[in-house]
Length: 123
Image (cartoon, rainbow, N blue to C red; front, side, top):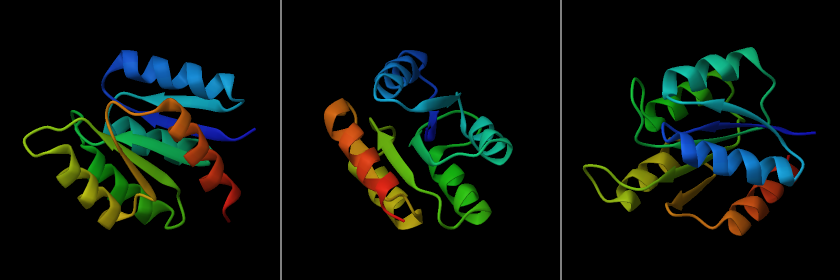
């Protein structure tokens, strides 16, 4: 069973993603901010990370850079609903920093699940 780390400061979003991922057969680890994301990534065998961009303590862009430093091959999906910039700007930066796929919120769970499957099947 693949283990996915979901990082988002919005608890209802984490709950929604956890439910969808578990229903699709994945094990889920949750983080509420970037600091927790990096800590949990170090402590667990994680197959894929889904991270929000705008979070407290350490934002998703910084987390992506840290995760890529720990494991250059980590598979990351970034998502954003915006902030000071348009969501598209944050997502472009996330892709440059190493996110394999990016999604603007609100996102399609069906598309997210098919993307996860595709990324996990790719070595």
